Image (cartoon, rainbow, N blue to C red):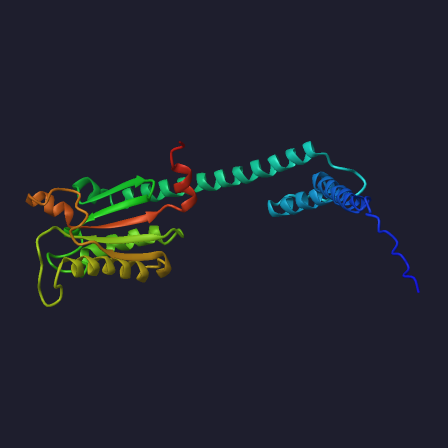
Length: 255
């Protein structure tokens, strides 16, 4: 039998149409997604606006039948931010007034000690600083408050007990070494003196969780230790009524 001749195969030159159609479909999908992303969803924008309004104490109910323009949203956001800044500014102003009143009250209670140079009351960004010479509180080399100083410090505690700011009590010494069975070094002496003041404050109504006792020994002098007068000034207890973080931030100079 004669062999049947094979039909010649022809190349399909239109296969590129399949790839081209896939490419066009993908390109179309890409532009649809890009358009969807770029379109403003006013419904979601109004929901966001209402949520922010509730956080800042405003009453805002999105109306489904009345579209809200972007400019109106901008004005609303600006109003909320302005209101928040105003509240923060008012809070900072009240804190500053309180700190000034604390400083004035301390100056009145300690007027005689201030005039004699045993006490100083100053204000800084950190808070109200009350520096008390150790000789007005303790006998030399001791950490127990003298009986005549207890009444004065009780008045100080009464003033401090009216607020809620944190209070740091820091003991300081001169650089003359001390070594005895009770205080092996100036570290123990300065810490014990700070703790004595803290205990008195707690006993007279100052909340314990507001207080911190710190012993700095001779590491933060305010005068030279080369003279008797300088060493006497360095032996002190510093009571700092700390400013709230909001007030300290508001007092920072702008760049």
